[in-house]
Every structure is written in C-alpha cells, then in structure tokens.
Image (cartoon, rainbow, N blue to C red; front, side, top):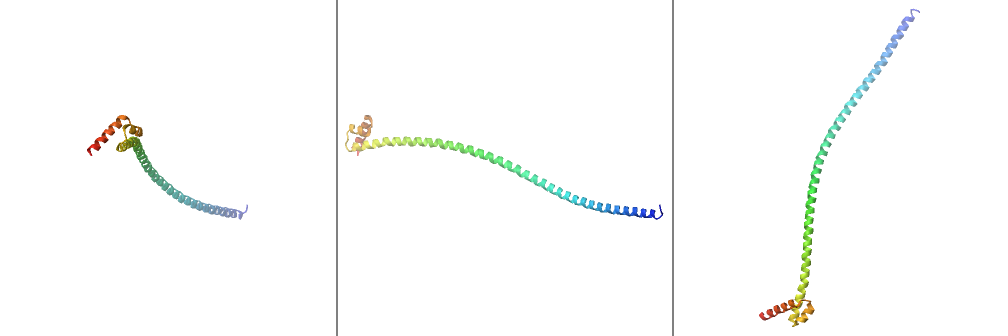
Length: 156
C-alpha cells in the first residue's frame, strides 16, 4: 500500500465517523424531541386522568346523596300511601254507613207518606176500613192514628 492510501483511508474513516456522529446526533435530537413531546402528552394525560377521577368522585358523591334522597322519598311515599289507603278504607266505611242511613230514611219516608195520606183521609172523614185499604197500614196503627187525629181536632 502506498503512503497516500493510508491518509485517504484515515480521512475516509474520519469522514465516516463524523458523518455517523452527525446522523447519530440528529437522530438523538429527534429522539429527545419525541421524548419531550411524549413527556408533555403524559403530563397532559395525567392531568386529564386526575380531573376525570375528581369528577368521578364528585359524581359518586352526588349519586350517594341522590340515593339517600331517593330512599327517604320512597319511605315517605310508602307512608303517604299507607295513610291514604287507611283514609280510603275509612271513607268507604263512612260511605256504606251513609248509604245505609239513606236507605233507612227512604224507607221511613215511604211510611211517612202512608201516614200523611191516612191523616188526609181522616180529615176528609174516611172510616177505618177505607184508610186501611188505601194506605195499606195495619188496623192497630190506623186506630191509633184516628185517635190521635180526633184528639187534635178536639183540642184545636
């Protein structure tokens, strides 16, 4: 080999080392940029995760409060329903009693009609047999009615 070949090889080797070092330096700087970018993304993601965790805790607290409120409301609704059912039963019972009273009143009103008719017939001078047949009242009641009528007419 010639003396000139050794320096050319050395220069080429040096050039190659410088070129490889330059490429390595460029790649290293790009890797550092990527690492910095990934680090920023990681910090951003960490912030978002922390914020989401905080929001999740707040939502969980609100859900807990809503659950408690819902339970209280359900208990109140149950109590109100029971009270309403009791009141409805009372009202139904009162309604039945009132219907029974109305029926009794109607029955007594029909009897009163017969007695009023009997009094009117007595005023017109009808006898016992006529009042019994017209008003469908028992003989004893008609006799009592006539005696009351006669007593009233004597005192007035």
